[in-house]
Length: 173
Image (tube, rainbow, N blue to C red; front, side, top):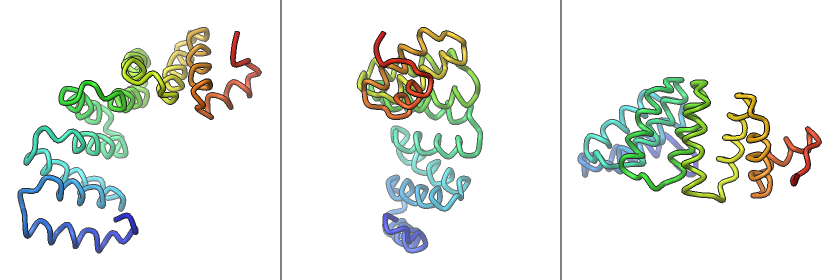
C-alpha cells in the first residue's frame, strides 16, 4: 500500500483473510486501500466488518467517518466520531475531526464546542485554534476569532500566520 501498488495490497489483504477471516485489522487495511482508490462504499463495507469483529476498534470508526465525509454524509460521519469519542474520550484529534464535520454541516456552535475540547486535550494544536477562529469569524465574533488566529499563529500554524498578515493584524495586541 505504501508503494501505491493497490492491486497487490488488496491481493495481500485477501490472502490474509483466507488465513484469518476474523482479523479486524486485515479488514481495516483493505478498507484503507479501497479508500485510497476512491471506492468509499467498498472501504466502508470493510470498516463495517472490522467494527463487527471488534466493536471497540476506534480507528475503524474514524476511517469510516472520513469516508462518510468524502461521500458528504456528514451526519453519519459525526455519528461515527461520537462513537470513537465514547471509546477514547481523551484523544483531542477525534474532537478536531468532529469539529470539521460540524463545520461542513454549517453548525458553528457545535464546531466551536468540539474545537474547544480538542484544545483542552491538546493545547498545542494550532489547527484546532485556527478552525475555531474561523467558526467564530463566521458568527461575527471577531475578537474571539482574532484571539484564536493569534494562538494558532504563535503555535506556528502557517495558515493562521498568513491570514493575520493578509489582514494586517499583528500577532500581539
